[in-house]
Image (tube, rainbow, N blue to C red; front, side, top):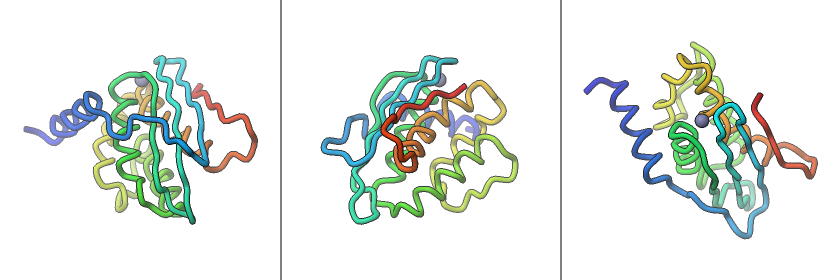
Length: 148
Ligand code: ZN
């Protein structure tokens, strides 16, 4: 089995059995993300305690890439410090858009590297991460993001 196939298998498995597919309640941060191009729509909810992600979930509907991305994102970020979370987020967004991304702290998330060959799919993979960014960094009350 080639590496590409292996990565594809992992994405399909996470799509079928998404981890942390829930709304965290009570939560301290949330965002609603929408990708009109594909129809992906998720709410990302986070409970941050003393600078650490105590719990994180995502819930909604979308294609296999977007759902697997939410599953692997939440699995990776639980228990992480906020600084590390933001660093991983930046590295992931580089991974799906640039050739020379820093991969050291991405772990299983590297399965999305192949996505950059399919520009339409980049928004699917990035959606939950854009929502995470909005939830944690946007100071306004309107926690809705749309990929264009
Ligand atoms: Zn999609």
